[in-house]
Length: 94
Image (cartoon, rainbow, N blue to C red; front, side, top):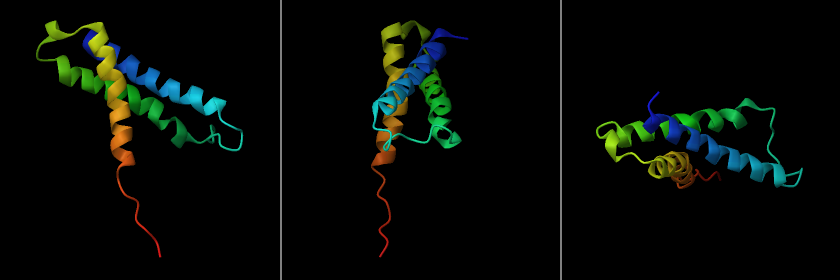
């Protein structure tokens, strides 16, 4: 596998692992349900998004790829999607 896909994919996983470490430090009453498969879905989607962002960013010109830039692209892809999802307004119920 190409480095411009692999490095961002691993970085996308690292971003999710940082979220896991924060969840483990939370109070037991505020911790997520680790047995629910929905909780683990971002750990699959994060590396896929990171790898896709790396491919999309560097497939035309692999010479522009650096490891630092690949890590930045891989980490920012899942975080950007999470930020965009947080801006979607929730419907108000009366």
